[in-house]
Image 1: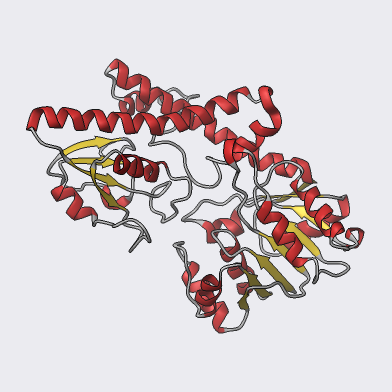
Image 2: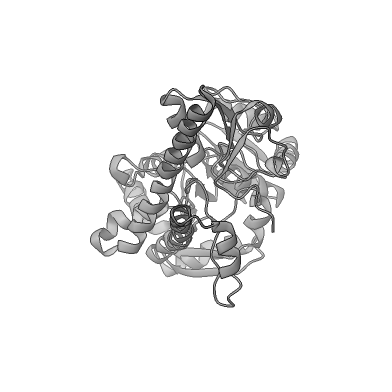
Length: 397
């Protein structure tokens, strides 16, 4: 079977490599010529365990070929970003563009699968765009199958996790589910497209709400002079309580974005989901204020401005992904405020606009070490200066 994967990012490339490894002939499409060139050399442009070996193997065997344009295939998978415009208005421009790009090569009987996490109704919009381009969508099987993988474990979870398939028709749902059952060991559950879209948004909104509770607790505990880490550890000894760990905020392209899709469509009825998003966004602002306050105290006590180390820039531990990262926002805010600040991200060898400092040098030289992301490299690190820990790096169980 020939599969065309449009979008070779954090989801599209692992999916393409996995399918090629399963014996499918895969055409990977991306708008970036540099990404296409890197992949066709058998290399990768993102950090994800095991992905490099998968890509090297299938490129060498010609099972995966990257291209700037789609080619005829039996299955088309759209795995492109779905960010938002200003004021958190959903932006499906990439989905629309990807759909238009395949309009000239789809044929009767093809599967068209939207994997991008999307606002409700986006799968229907895919069908509308194809119709506008002169495609008879009644001859296609169009469905939504949202990814639900954890960065750092993508290659395993693409296979092991349960999947939800929502077809625009019952037959489309069954056809697409059959395709996924060919490589997914978890259950493949069939529903309609709108329910599948809402399911993914619900999953991430649920997590966002629970993180917001932990982040709000951390703010309150600071006010009450209580160790939030000890508080959560003790409260979680209750058999029906499982409070998550607080952090610098919430980032990434899923939890920090998807709840806004519900809020935008749901309006005033999405009250808890909106409140959670606002709390988690505010936590980052609170962290910045807390650091600035510590800086002022240092100035008063030492008669000079301190050197600050921002430990971690990624949106979660042990990955290189900076999308919607609260830690990155903290770094830029401090930099814009004129603070002498070091950027530390051990999962990146370089950054196009930020000078990176090694974590060991930062720990030795900074006057205030600020833990923003709980990367493994930071645990048990000897620090010479003061410490602000917003992610539990220094917490001992």
